Image 1 (cartoon, rainbow, N blue to C red):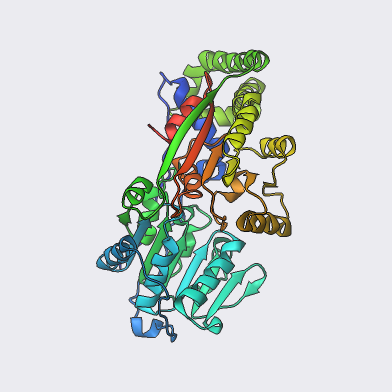
Image 2 (cartoon, rainbow, N blue to C red; image 1 turned 45 degrees about the vertical axis):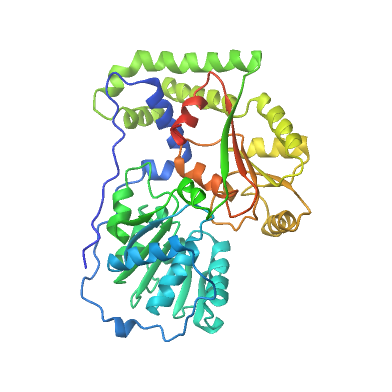
Length: 445
């Protein structure tokens, strides 16, 4: 079995002729994923490479899939098995990645560790194994949320699995849900501390902005199967869907403030570009200077404030209201990049809202209400991007978003589960601001 080697994140080097577009993207990325951009390199692989006997790793349970897999799910698992049970399967949100993992468990019947990013997924995965594989509840445990139930099949959070005392030996099959989280320095040890001969990564978007995508493949195996939303939609496995961009303009007052702030940012860039680029790491030098240089700090703050004006333009709220009226009979999820706008839309348009601040009981009540039809509209931030079983909707409105393709695909995935009607995703974008470039980067069409 090949060793999982360490990987160095990509350096964010910008040449002296740095373009405004590139810096906008870099600064947006810093806001979107600060840990992945600024953390150190992955921990070295010190895993014991002694071979393991599959017989010694048998789970001792019976498993039989209680549903008929779709053709692409069968194809995905066969491709994974052809690669000696190591690799990453890339399927869009809503395409049934969980079923592929259940097929792997049923085929191998080994001691299995399923790693998930959230507490909510602990219980979703446990229930899926019990109900869809007909595995006795006593054989399926969860670790996390105050529980430590180590069983032949164990579902565990990334945070719990990364603890130094987590017993990760004697695992036959390692499954990483939302596997793009794994290469972070905090979580890479999950893969390096286990000798699991079979490894399966599941994700809609394996690419990472910090350059650690190849590290994911070192840890779990190469990408062995991939289907894009458009492919599955064309084949009839998920809903037909449309994507539309809607452009709005800043008000006169917003435009004046935006240009003043961006002018301050551009002036600093023009005055300091040669100094910042001297060491070959423009972005790193900019961040370091901001810690001690008031001018650099003010320039970064100006850039951030200008971005907030573009993302939270007043015209966007009016456009959301117009789209809600147009689709009054549809189930709609409104997504915003920042929770302040979630709260504003919720208050002004009387929509139930879910953010990371929403209590678990309230969030469950809102999602249950959305599921049973008590609510047909809700507004949320990043908290529903992944790791939560969101009831099906047919319209998504992205009021603002990051530049990452992952987030865009996650939000699209909330409306493309199989249905007879055509799903729709709207992006509301502020004209003549850096948001136009951000939208182009996440969906280059």
